Length: 189
Image (tube, rainbow, N blue to C red; front, side, top):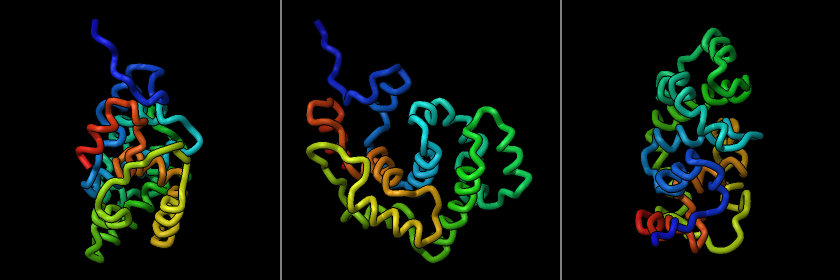
């Protein structure tokens, strides 16, 4: 008799969440553009469940040119209006304008020879943090990184969003000790 693998309990509501947990969540991401995309998606999550964002992720990618910062930075007021009328995405003007703003800030970092991926991994010493114990919604590190991102001009990057982003992109491994993914993610870090 084969037993189902033990997973973190937050993701057991349906196949979409289970697939995300088993294949993406917590996997270390070092690519700058992929890190930026995930931070933008976590911004869309504010006030919503991650499941909603996952269900709309492909539509968001399509609407935001696969989250290519060079293209998103060029969006105009007309583009914002089109997005506000797109029923397939999360239609929040403040979140939409934040993504456009954040594309410009991301590109400004690039133009200053500051790689977004290198920058964030440097913030944690280059190696994923293996968290043990109760998982907070934010901590001193996410507060510091949030403050730095905001100082640079990023929007929708509060400490709770930053902490969730750090978990999702493998900067912090918060898979439960009994979860089958914890050791896999730790090995990838």
